[in-house]
Image (cartoon, rainbow, N blue to C red):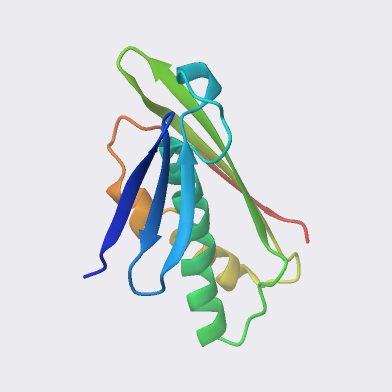
Length: 135
């Protein structure tokens, strides 16, 4: 179990703390929803969680098999739906090393489609994923 706490600081701005590490992060409401857009919004954190979960689970596999994935990248494009306001889609584009063999590529693609965050999203959230072996 991991405990996270958040404090409301006013003007739709919060500070969250990860209890085990004491790391802090701040959130702000986006400009299109009465905020300043001064930091990640809560839904931006969902997009961030998806992207970093995919890279992290790929890295776990890669490190176990002596594969270097450093400099691999992911971009996540978040689209919101208006009514009700929710995340409509999270489109990911992953750039991985081009020198990986076909078995490793297949395994990394499988991992990308099955990371814990992706499996935790509501099925109404579209999660298109493009994987490019281009680095």
